[in-house]
Amino acid sequence: MLKSTLVVASLLASISVSAQAMSGNVLYDQMKRGSRAQAMAYVEAVADVFYGNKFCPPEGTTVGQIYDLVEKNLRDYPQYRQLEAWSLILVSLEKYYPCSTK
Image 1: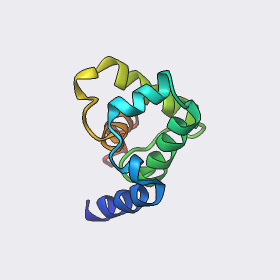
Image 2: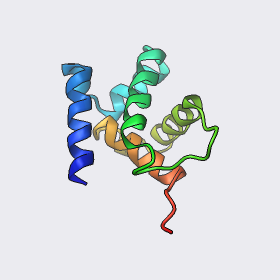
Image 3: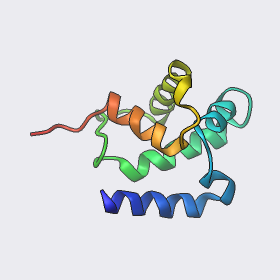
């Protein structure tokens, strides 16, 4: 858990100061009205940090599919969009692509 937290902190520090404070509202707005490419890059960066550790998508899953699932969750649960975007992305990925407990 601590390792994941440190990795996310490093990721956010490396993106930009404005991204550090990115909320789900800002990410959703980027997805719908702003820079889709920037939103996609942010989702992909967070997914890369947690891939195989916190979520385990089936082989062949694309970044586009992950992006669509995150966008769906942000649309379906607007009451949580004030939270940090990276945490909402992680919740979405864990929901749809849980890792095996075997």
